[in-house]
Length: 135
Image 1 (cartoon, rainbow, N blue to C red):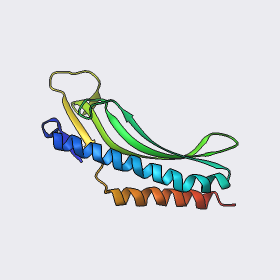
Image 2: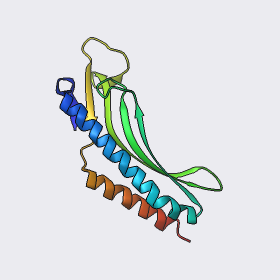
Image 3: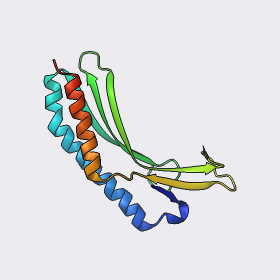
Image 4: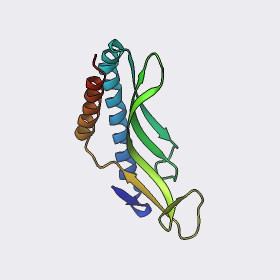
């Protein structure tokens, strides 16, 4: 869902925050649940919440969750799945820019999937990786 700067309200900020918290808790649950299973297969399972910036309505702010799988021996990432929660950027003529230029606009993009959809998507990715790495 795309939001224009005029749509940046306290309600939207609270919604972004609540989604970030819920998804942070989800990846913690998935980490606890699946880390031992991947370890038995000689794989490292990691999940993290990432946030850049402090104010969700400030250009450059972004938040996301990621699940990564790496080979214990090689310690290199073999599979990564990232879901962006919120991203705020400044645009000028449709091109992202870093400096405020007269005529530029600030927009934010919010994840439009439900918590349940994201949970299913992440679990499907995890099961797929376990299936690929069987043996």
